[in-house]
Amino acid sequence: MVLPTALVRTLVAAAFAAVLAFAPAAAQQLVTVTTTTVTWSYDDAPGDDADAGDFDVDAALLDDEGLADEADFAPARRYAPSATLAAPGRAKAHYGPFAVIDATTARMAGDVTAATPRQFAAMLAAFPGIKRLEMVDCPGSIDEEANLVLARAIRRAGLETIVPSGGSVRSGAVELWLAGVTRRAAPDAEFGVHSWADEYGREAKDYPPNDPVHAEYLGLYRELGMDDARARAFYALTNSTPFDEVRYLTRDDMARFVALN
Image (cartoon, rainbow, N blue to C red):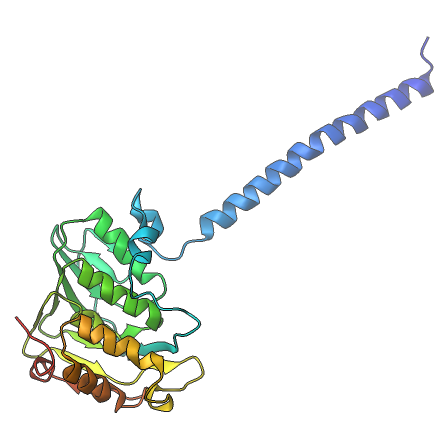
C-alpha cells in the first residue's frame, strides 16, 4: 500500500523529471530560432553573394593582381555626392548600384562600397552576356581599394563603358569609366575629379612623391591604356583639386588622355 505522502513525493519527482527532460529541448529550440534570425537579417545588400548561385566570387576577385595590401594602401574614399541620385530606370535585376537592363546592357547609378566588386561579379555570373555598362549617375567610392579592384574587374570583363546624355561620373567612378575596353561619352557628359583622402583626412599632396600609394594609380592608368606621360598628367590633374571640391571635365578634356569611340 502506498502512503499518501509517498504518492505525493512520487508525483512531484515525476513532474520535476519531466521539466528537466523538456528544458534542454526548449533551450535548443530557442537557440535555433535566435541563430536563424541573426543569419537571416545579416545581408550586405540586395544582389550580393546570395545572387551569385554557384559562382565562386572569391576566386573571381582574388586572382586580380590589382588587389592591394590593405596595410600599405592609404586612400579611403573619393566621393562627390549630388543632391539627388538619378535612377537607372526599369530593370530585370539589381546588384547594388548595378541594374541589368537587358541581356547585354547594365546601368550604374550609385557609389562603390566594399561589397560592390562582389555585386559586380554576381551580376556577370547571372548575366554573362553583358557587354556594356552605362554610367548614369556615379558619385564615386566610399571604399577606394574596392574601387580599384572593380576597375580592373570591368577591364578584365571586356566591357564597353558609356556615359549617356545627362550622365555624370565623379571621383573614383572616373576610373571605372576609364576601365572600359572601349569608351563612349555623350557631348554633355560630365566628369568630376578631385583628390582622394585617407581615413585621417590626408590627401595625395600630403604624401611624398615617391610614396608607393601614388604608384597604385599610375600603374592602373597605364593598364587602362595611358602612356607614362598621360598617366602622370592625369593623376596630377585630379590631385590639383582638394578632396572637398570637384573640378568638372568635358568629354573633350578626357579625350586628351584616352581614346574615345
